[in-house]
Amino acid sequence: MTFASAPGKIILFGEHAVVYNRPALAVPVLQVNAHVEVSDANQAGIWLDAPDISLHSDISALPATHPLVTIIKNTFLTAGITTPPPLKIKVTSTIPVASGLGSGAAVSVAMIRALSAHLAHPLNAEQVNKLCYEAEKLHHGTPSGIDNTVITYAIPVYFVRGQPIETFSVARPFTIVIGDTGLSAPTKEAVDDVRKLWEADKSRWEAVFDRVAEIVREARKAIESGAWQDLGPLMNANHALLQAMTVSSPELDRLVLAARTAGAMGAKLSGGGRGGNMLALVTPESAEKVASALLSAGAKSTIITTIQ
Image: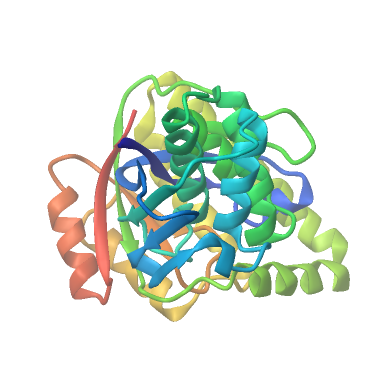
C-alpha cells in the first residue's frame, strides 16, 4: 500500500488581471490536502474509489476523458508502465471542490505521486507538474499553470502568463484566515464577464489591471522583505478593484467586512469570485476572533493557516 498527499493553494493577489498578462501571487495551504492510497487488488482491472464525489467504479466503466482516468493513464505512460497490475486507488480530500483552493490539482498531484511510487517508477517534480497541468486542461480549458505549480512544489509562486513561473521566499511567516462562502465559484462565467467589460472600454480596464499589477509587485516585495503587515492595505485595495470588475458578491463582501471589523489588517476575495473563498490577514493572536466573526457572518467554514 502506498500513500501520497498534496496541499491546497490560494491566490493572494492578482486574480483576473492575470488573464491580461499581469502578475499574480499564490501560496500553498498546508492545512488542507488531497490524500491518495494505492494498493494491489484481488480483482482484475483498476478500481477507483473517491467517496467525496460519490465515485466507485472500475476505470474501464468511466469515460476515457474523465480527468481521473486521464491522470491514471498518463501516469502509466510517463512511468513506462505498459501493463499495470490490478490496483485499488482511494482518493479523499479535505479541500472543498470549486472553491479556489486547487482541489483538482491537489488530487492530480497526490494521485500521480502515489501511483508512480507504488509501481516503483517514482516521477520527479517536473514530470508531476507537467502531468498535472495536462489534467488541469480538462478541468479549466486554458489553465494559468498556477495551481499545478504551487501544489507540486508546495512553495509560493509569482506568475505572469506566458513567462516562466518564478518561486520566491517568505522572509517572515504570516497568518491568514480563509473563509468559505459555501457557494460554488463559477470561474469561467466571471472571467467571461470581465472580458466583456474590457472589450467595451479597454483603456479603462487596462489601467485597472496595471494598478492590480502594482499591488502584486508591492505584495511580493513586502513578503520577501518580511514586512508582512504591509499586505493588509494591499488586500483592501485589490478587493476594491475586484469589486469594480463585478467579480465579488454580497456573500464575499459580507465576509470581507466582517473580517475587517473583527480586527483583520486587510481582507479580500480570492480566486474567481462570485463564491468560493476570501482571505484575511491577521495576527496569530487575532486569528480565532476573526475566524469566529466569519462564521457568524455566514461562512460555511474557516481555515487558519501560516504562510511560510
